[in-house]
Image (cartoon, rainbow, N blue to C red):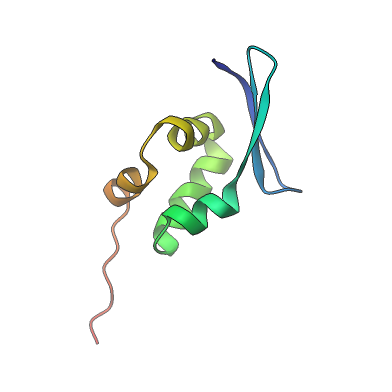
Length: 81
């Protein structure tokens, strides 16, 4: 199946996808963040994709490895105590 359309619904906080065969799904973005993001930098990266490249976000969540992606693109250095 190929994604025909993809849009973020702010009312439900879900990424809504419609496929070429007519089927539809919704990705709960808050649940995804709670599951895969370990810190605010990773959450910020996911938010960036949601608002700026929803198709890439959907592809990452459905077919990719979001944990590895987030560890690769974000840098988190805790403050020294």
